Length: 155
Image (tube, rainbow, N blue to C red; front, side, top):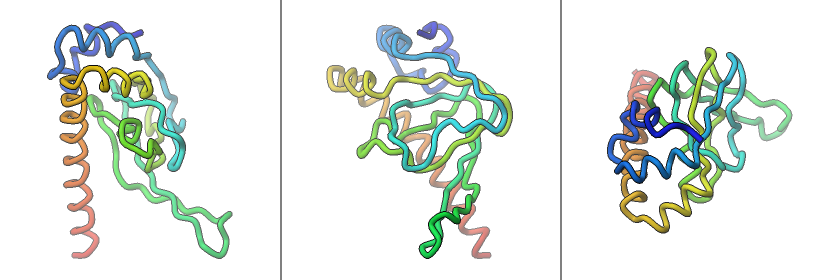
């Protein structure tokens, strides 16, 4: 369990009531990653939603060659900065991560159990709305950043 006071330090949790923050804290745990460690892999079952507390994470997309599937190339597609959530797939069907995430430096995170979070959202629609609102805010930022990358690549 994480202290609710720690969660309150991060903007992601700013829209939740005190009771909701306490409930989220009950299903959250601290996690430390060493530089170079993989948080999760693309196509892995998504069982946690994460909030990066400190450090930095790299998003990587893998491409396998059709004729030689053992040949896999990785391409950097983004980064996660402190205060940002990662692992949105944990609350979106089919609950499969869509990128590989690695620590580019030693990093500290909060991991939120997705199964419990989804159950809580089914029982508290205000919580569900706020979780989706917060996640969508960060998804839109990531989408805009991706558009900028694509525009730069085409220029």
